[in-house]
Length: 405
Image (cartoon, rainbow, N blue to C red):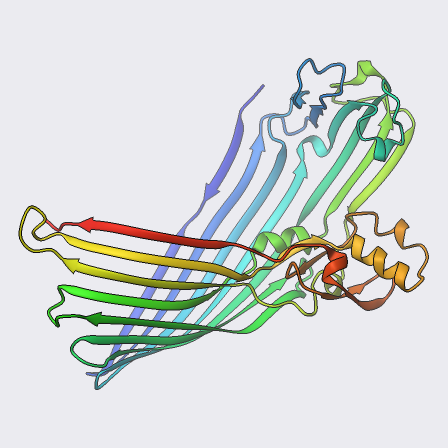
């Protein structure tokens, strides 16, 4: 039909200045910027997106069949820019190497996305989508028209303060210990904070023991906590002025596949986003906990001597990781309806119809959140929300044989 274009990439700039203050004290300042363009376009961007549902008489197969002359499903113009400043001080005091550092980062995402041609038409026949059309009798032709528009400028600020100590306890024992405190501030299209996680203290501890004191045989272990930022795409989808509307119309079978169908009676309208920026109080669980992972590593390394493997380095490492807490955006409508039933509040089912309100939360936990339509903050139970607790575990044993030549 025509070519599609995906333009990605940009320029990176990094500069670092190091200062030798005394023989035992150094400092460094680092600046970096990263530009990343994200543009998706096509030769036929004026043509509406179009698909035939398997129930359509114009679809001879069992899967979804593209129709029309569109070349890109979505048209998107986006730019990401990341700027970072980092300050480090290193002090060497006796058997200790101390490092204190501060890092601040600003990520700005600009995004403008629209459906190809401004509309997406999906053609089907009843009884498909009967929950929307109300028609369970086979044979009536329908078209679902989707309008999707989203965009804006979104900022995310991140700050990190860390302190670490590399301590040469003896000729054979090295201990590394540190703490890293981070904070993330995600903002909506109006520049207002919609989720902020602060004072996330990550502990890091590592120990290496040189068995013979000559570097040939070592055992080592470490423990670390790693706090994870919330992706900027969450700002765009949850905290932008998103227009996302489905309208269902009766039509005739000869209209299936048309770029400009003739509509019959409208049978349903579903609004997922009306173009307004959501109230920041309604998008984040007030009891939200940060997202982080725990990691344990133990290992053994030895330089082999004699035989065919003379000079090879043998390493055996065991790694265990567990996602201790996660943050997800979840629909809360079912829990809101349970709350309304409990409190004898009428009319909730006309608003919270399944996917009306999405909230950032820790799945499997109770929630405290603001409901704009009721103008109140409520507690929703984990049982009514009905999302399972996170469970992601990773375990690995790596056996490596290396040989420097």
